[in-house]
Amino acid sequence: MDSIALLAAVEVDWPVLALSLGLLILAVALLILEIFVVSFGILTVASVASAVAAIHYAFTASDVAGWAMTVAVPVLAVVLGRWGLARIRASRRLVPKSEITAEAGYHHHAEEVGVYPGAEGVMVTRARPSGRARFIGGECDVQVQSGSLGRGEKVVVLRIDGPIVFVTPAADRESHDVTS
Image (tube, rainbow, N blue to C red):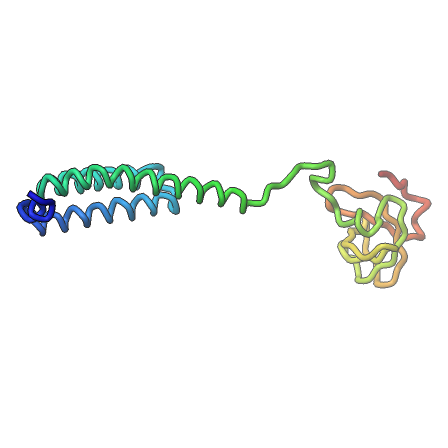
């Protein structure tokens, strides 16, 4: 008997075979979705269950379809698994990696504009008690140690305490101890 006659002799339940193929497509879709969505393996378990059901219904349709599905499911799983792992590895290269160097950490804007205890500047805005002052390297926000200052008044940096730059009028410089 030739192979065409053998295939013609096999009885196939086509609606059940269509269900089996639908379950196989669902298994593949769930496995692909697992690569893109973090489900902690729930989609993988659902994919395996769908593949097992696809094999079961393929055997119900016919023995030839069952054995064909038994061979196709692991091959598809290996191909999709390799593709998914390659995609995950490639996505890790897209994430920028930072290095911790000596420059890491908090850097006050005052460092950039050259503000340090004893530095002299001019008020750009009024300070009641906060305002903005211009120094040699640029401007930064300051806070008056006591009282208030008008625009254009000369100031001296007393100290830098975290993000706050404390200033005093330049005329009062002798009465205040400039500390770092």
